[in-house]
Image: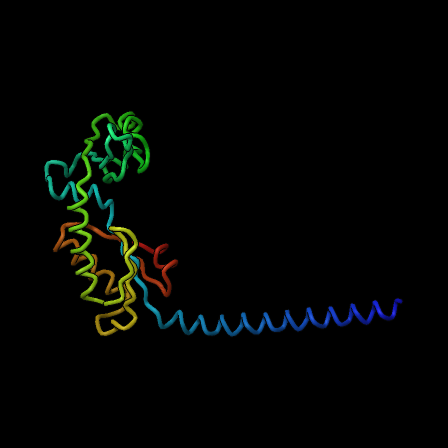
Length: 193
């Protein structure tokens, strides 16, 4: 009957309102906690710029001002651009494209085969530098890491630590890195400079 249906509707609406109110309370609690969390955590995202190509240009100074692409083997059907330097990027060379396409964009492109043992060496050296600032390092591939420097306040702010790491990597390894600073990994990744 109608009275029963109305009673059921009232109960359902009441339960929905309880759920909505509970959800709002959870969101408010999380947001307030997130504000505190955001102000306390300091996360850096360090990314070595054009890593493979930068290592190749550093190891072979003759390549320094030339457009360079580190490429896989055409014979092994891996003939794609793995990394390129800024000079090659200026011609529109893109990571992941076929070597023949890259050569169409830049006829003077110098193709270099990868030397993974060197990349591993410089990756390890960079992580040793990061380790001077924190023991909380989360690698993401060979050329990227997140660093939690929350407890490193005596070394400066997150931005000061990022600048110091950039200078140290450039001075000691001859490579450049971008570093983003934020309260979490996502925003640190987006904030790299």
